[in-house]
Image 1: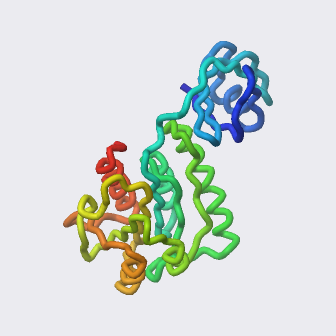
Image 2 (image 1 turned 45 degrees about the vertical axis):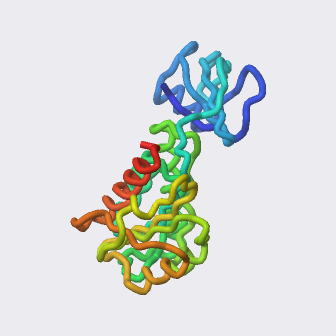
Image 3 (image 1 turned 90 degrees about the horizontal axis):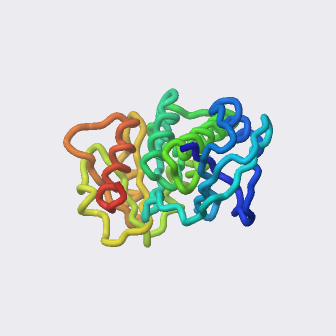
Length: 241
Protein backbone atom coordinates (compact mmCIF):
# COMPACT_ATOMS: atom_id res chain seq x y z
CA UNK A 1 0.00 0.00 0.00
CA UNK A 2 1.45 3.39 -1.05
CA UNK A 3 1.61 5.83 1.89
CA UNK A 4 1.75 9.63 1.60
CA UNK A 5 1.43 12.67 3.84
CA UNK A 6 -0.76 15.72 3.27
CA UNK A 7 -0.33 19.11 4.94
CA UNK A 8 -3.91 19.64 6.08
CA UNK A 9 -7.08 17.69 6.92
CA UNK A 10 -9.28 16.55 4.01
CA UNK A 11 -12.90 17.63 4.41
CA UNK A 12 -14.52 16.53 1.17
CA UNK A 13 -15.05 13.26 -0.66
CA UNK A 14 -12.19 13.91 -3.11
CA UNK A 15 -8.62 15.18 -2.74
CA UNK A 16 -6.04 16.19 -5.36
CA UNK A 17 -2.40 15.24 -4.85
CA UNK A 18 0.10 17.48 -6.63
CA UNK A 19 3.85 18.03 -6.95
CA UNK A 20 6.44 15.40 -6.16
CA UNK A 21 3.94 12.93 -4.67
CA UNK A 22 1.81 13.04 -7.84
CA UNK A 23 4.85 12.49 -10.04
CA UNK A 24 5.98 9.61 -7.82
CA UNK A 25 2.56 7.96 -8.07
CA UNK A 26 2.37 8.35 -11.86
CA UNK A 27 5.99 7.85 -12.95
CA UNK A 28 7.73 5.75 -10.29
CA UNK A 29 4.91 3.61 -8.90
CA UNK A 30 3.00 3.61 -12.21
CA UNK A 31 -0.29 3.39 -10.38
CA UNK A 32 -3.57 3.29 -12.28
CA UNK A 33 -7.16 4.39 -11.77
CA UNK A 34 -8.87 2.34 -9.10
CA UNK A 35 -5.69 1.43 -7.21
CA UNK A 36 -5.63 2.17 -3.50
CA UNK A 37 -3.33 4.36 -1.43
CA UNK A 38 -3.19 5.90 2.04
CA UNK A 39 -2.93 9.56 3.04
CA UNK A 40 -2.15 10.87 6.54
CA UNK A 41 -2.67 14.51 7.53
CA UNK A 42 -0.90 16.63 10.15
CA UNK A 43 -3.56 15.76 12.73
CA UNK A 44 -2.77 12.05 12.36
CA UNK A 45 -5.97 11.23 10.52
CA UNK A 46 -5.56 8.33 8.11
CA UNK A 47 -7.46 8.29 4.81
CA UNK A 48 -7.91 5.11 2.80
CA UNK A 49 -8.41 6.17 -0.83
CA UNK A 50 -8.58 4.91 -4.38
CA UNK A 51 -7.35 6.78 -7.45
CA UNK A 52 -10.14 8.47 -9.40
CA UNK A 53 -7.99 10.15 -12.07
CA UNK A 54 -4.27 10.33 -12.71
CA UNK A 55 -2.09 12.78 -14.63
CA UNK A 56 1.67 13.53 -14.52
CA UNK A 57 1.27 16.56 -12.21
CA UNK A 58 -1.90 15.77 -10.27
CA UNK A 59 -3.70 12.72 -8.97
CA UNK A 60 -7.27 12.88 -7.68
CA UNK A 61 -8.31 10.31 -5.12
CA UNK A 62 -11.70 9.43 -3.62
CA UNK A 63 -11.78 9.05 0.14
CA UNK A 64 -13.22 5.66 1.06
CA UNK A 65 -12.59 5.72 4.80
CA UNK A 66 -11.05 8.00 7.43
CA UNK A 67 -9.97 7.24 11.01
CA UNK A 68 -7.21 8.14 13.52
CA UNK A 69 -3.83 6.67 12.57
CA UNK A 70 -2.83 4.01 15.09
CA UNK A 71 0.79 3.60 14.01
CA UNK A 72 2.43 6.09 16.38
CA UNK A 73 4.06 5.12 19.69
CA UNK A 74 2.40 6.43 22.86
CA UNK A 75 5.75 7.81 24.00
CA UNK A 76 7.63 10.76 22.47
CA UNK A 77 11.33 10.09 22.00
CA UNK A 78 13.76 12.83 21.04
CA UNK A 79 17.15 11.60 19.89
CA UNK A 80 20.04 13.97 20.60
CA UNK A 81 22.69 12.50 18.32
CA UNK A 82 26.28 13.73 18.42
CA UNK A 83 27.42 14.15 14.82
CA UNK A 84 29.33 11.15 13.46
CA UNK A 85 31.76 11.15 10.56
CA UNK A 86 30.80 10.72 6.91
CA UNK A 87 27.28 9.69 6.00
CA UNK A 88 26.51 7.73 9.15
CA UNK A 89 23.92 10.31 10.17
CA UNK A 90 21.89 9.49 7.04
CA UNK A 91 21.61 5.89 8.24
CA UNK A 92 20.81 6.93 11.82
CA UNK A 93 18.00 9.25 10.71
CA UNK A 94 16.50 6.63 8.41
CA UNK A 95 16.45 3.84 10.97
CA UNK A 96 15.54 5.97 13.99
CA UNK A 97 12.45 7.22 12.12
CA UNK A 98 11.50 3.64 11.22
CA UNK A 99 11.81 2.65 14.88
CA UNK A 100 9.54 5.44 16.13
CA UNK A 101 11.46 8.54 17.27
CA UNK A 102 9.49 11.78 17.36
CA UNK A 103 12.35 14.11 16.47
CA UNK A 104 16.12 14.13 16.02
CA UNK A 105 18.48 16.87 17.16
CA UNK A 106 22.03 16.73 15.75
CA UNK A 107 24.55 17.81 18.38
CA UNK A 108 28.16 19.01 18.30
CA UNK A 109 29.78 17.46 21.36
CA UNK A 110 33.36 17.82 22.61
CA UNK A 111 34.60 14.68 20.85
CA UNK A 112 32.85 15.15 17.51
CA UNK A 113 35.32 14.86 14.65
CA UNK A 114 32.73 16.04 12.13
CA UNK A 115 32.24 19.82 12.43
CA UNK A 116 30.61 21.09 9.21
CA UNK A 117 30.30 24.82 8.61
CA UNK A 118 26.93 26.60 8.69
CA UNK A 119 26.27 26.22 4.95
CA UNK A 120 27.13 22.52 4.95
CA UNK A 121 24.94 21.93 8.00
CA UNK A 122 21.99 23.64 6.31
CA UNK A 123 22.35 21.34 3.28
CA UNK A 124 22.74 18.30 5.50
CA UNK A 125 19.68 19.20 7.56
CA UNK A 126 17.61 19.54 4.39
CA UNK A 127 18.82 16.10 3.24
CA UNK A 128 18.17 14.53 6.64
CA UNK A 129 14.60 15.81 6.62
CA UNK A 130 14.06 14.32 3.15
CA UNK A 131 15.37 11.01 4.47
CA UNK A 132 13.03 11.30 7.46
CA UNK A 133 10.07 11.87 5.12
CA UNK A 134 10.95 8.87 2.94
CA UNK A 135 11.47 6.68 5.98
CA UNK A 136 8.18 7.82 7.53
CA UNK A 137 6.35 6.90 4.33
CA UNK A 138 8.09 3.54 4.04
CA UNK A 139 7.40 2.60 7.67
CA UNK A 140 3.83 4.01 7.61
CA UNK A 141 4.28 6.55 10.38
CA UNK A 142 1.47 8.82 11.50
CA UNK A 143 3.83 11.82 11.56
CA UNK A 144 6.95 12.98 9.76
CA UNK A 145 9.63 13.22 12.48
CA UNK A 146 11.59 16.46 12.23
CA UNK A 147 15.38 16.74 12.13
CA UNK A 148 16.13 19.98 13.95
CA UNK A 149 19.01 22.37 13.24
CA UNK A 150 22.32 21.30 14.77
CA UNK A 151 23.10 22.67 18.24
CA UNK A 152 26.03 22.56 20.65
CA UNK A 153 25.95 20.09 23.52
CA UNK A 154 25.32 22.87 26.04
CA UNK A 155 22.45 24.23 23.95
CA UNK A 156 20.92 20.74 23.78
CA UNK A 157 21.12 20.31 27.55
CA UNK A 158 19.46 23.70 28.10
CA UNK A 159 16.36 22.49 26.24
CA UNK A 160 15.81 19.60 28.66
CA UNK A 161 12.97 19.66 31.16
CA UNK A 162 13.42 17.89 34.47
CA UNK A 163 9.81 16.72 34.10
CA UNK A 164 10.90 14.49 31.20
CA UNK A 165 12.94 11.31 31.35
CA UNK A 166 16.45 12.34 30.28
CA UNK A 167 18.99 9.60 29.52
CA UNK A 168 22.58 9.84 28.36
CA UNK A 169 23.98 6.56 27.06
CA UNK A 170 27.55 6.41 28.29
CA UNK A 171 30.22 3.93 27.25
CA UNK A 172 31.72 4.02 30.76
CA UNK A 173 28.57 2.57 32.27
CA UNK A 174 25.32 3.47 33.96
CA UNK A 175 21.94 2.01 34.78
CA UNK A 176 20.00 -0.32 32.54
CA UNK A 177 17.25 1.43 30.60
CA UNK A 178 14.53 -0.57 32.33
CA UNK A 179 15.69 0.76 35.70
CA UNK A 180 15.36 4.36 34.52
CA UNK A 181 12.04 4.57 32.71
CA UNK A 182 9.22 5.59 35.06
CA UNK A 183 5.76 3.99 34.72
CA UNK A 184 3.55 5.62 32.08
CA UNK A 185 6.44 7.74 30.79
CA UNK A 186 5.36 10.13 28.03
CA UNK A 187 8.51 12.05 27.01
CA UNK A 188 12.03 10.63 26.76
CA UNK A 189 15.15 12.48 25.67
CA UNK A 190 18.17 10.32 24.82
CA UNK A 191 21.75 11.37 24.16
CA UNK A 192 24.03 9.23 21.99
CA UNK A 193 27.69 10.06 21.41
CA UNK A 194 29.77 10.21 18.25
CA UNK A 195 32.76 7.94 17.59
CA UNK A 196 34.61 9.22 20.67
CA UNK A 197 31.68 9.07 23.07
CA UNK A 198 31.04 11.71 25.71
CA UNK A 199 33.34 13.50 28.11
CA UNK A 200 32.63 13.18 31.84
CA UNK A 201 31.71 16.85 32.11
CA UNK A 202 29.04 16.38 29.44
CA UNK A 203 27.53 13.49 31.38
CA UNK A 204 27.57 15.73 34.47
CA UNK A 205 25.68 18.43 32.58
CA UNK A 206 22.86 16.02 31.79
CA UNK A 207 22.82 14.73 35.38
CA UNK A 208 22.50 18.33 36.59
CA UNK A 209 19.28 18.60 34.53
CA UNK A 210 17.82 15.52 36.19
CA UNK A 211 19.24 13.05 33.68
CA UNK A 212 20.64 9.58 34.23
CA UNK A 213 23.63 7.81 32.66
CA UNK A 214 22.67 4.51 31.03
CA UNK A 215 24.41 1.51 29.55
CA UNK A 216 23.61 -0.52 26.44
CA UNK A 217 25.41 -3.57 27.78
CA UNK A 218 28.94 -4.86 28.24
CA UNK A 219 29.95 -4.34 24.64
CA UNK A 220 30.78 -0.92 23.23
CA UNK A 221 28.56 -0.25 20.21
CA UNK A 222 29.43 1.80 17.14
CA UNK A 223 27.90 5.29 17.10
CA UNK A 224 25.48 4.31 14.32
CA UNK A 225 24.40 1.14 16.17
CA UNK A 226 23.89 2.67 19.62
CA UNK A 227 20.89 4.91 18.82
CA UNK A 228 19.05 2.09 17.07
CA UNK A 229 19.68 -0.23 20.00
CA UNK A 230 18.56 2.44 22.50
CA UNK A 231 15.36 3.30 20.63
CA UNK A 232 14.52 -0.39 20.14
CA UNK A 233 14.91 -1.05 23.87
CA UNK A 234 12.72 1.94 24.73
CA UNK A 235 10.00 0.90 22.30
CA UNK A 236 10.02 -2.62 23.72
CA UNK A 237 9.93 -1.51 27.34
CA UNK A 238 7.05 0.91 26.68
CA UNK A 239 5.02 -1.73 24.77
CA UNK A 240 5.50 0.05 21.46
CA UNK A 241 7.48 -2.67 19.73
